Image 1: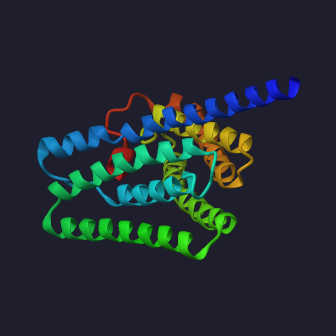
Image 2 (image 1 turned 90 degrees about the vertical axis):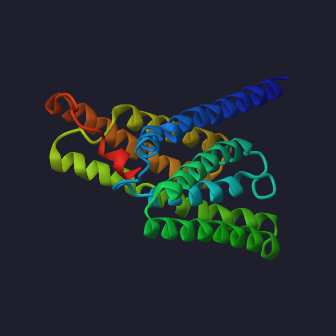
Image 3 (image 1 turned 180 degrees about the vertical axis):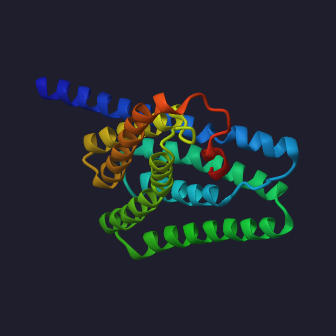
Length: 235
């Protein structure tokens, strides 16, 4: 009786952490909307870069595949969050291509095709060449590498904040959402005893703590933000 009750509570806590991670990730997925409203309004991509959305799309697709039952049974909440993320990134990339100059349009279209080609190869290789355990390890290592590479953006922002001694270019709610999402999936990965989830999100949690500490340290010296966050231009 006690064992069954503990298992039920453990399962509920695990699912709660995963659902929380999905909710906080949704905040991150919608954060570029102001940038794309501007692109739609001006019918131009101006100086914005579309590359981060291409990288984010590939990351979401790889992590989506890792969360699928065929690869990793029992972590469907990883698949749900990354399926939503992939849809958002695909929409962003499509808008960018629609309003970009010809050279950017061709480059982004080529990269989009390359992303889906690479993802198709990963799916094909993981199914055809690996059994269930090796398949999980193969895709898991790819997802960890992909997630860690995505931390380049927070590192850039942290360096900028320290250099400028200002949090003007580090929106508080974006940093908070990143921290809470990483923390939620860190806990979820620990409940699931899955290092491919809790290791990269542990790194993300530490980076989130650093950002929040920097915000607390420099916010009193920054004054009111008078310009748009730099993240909008890099997003």
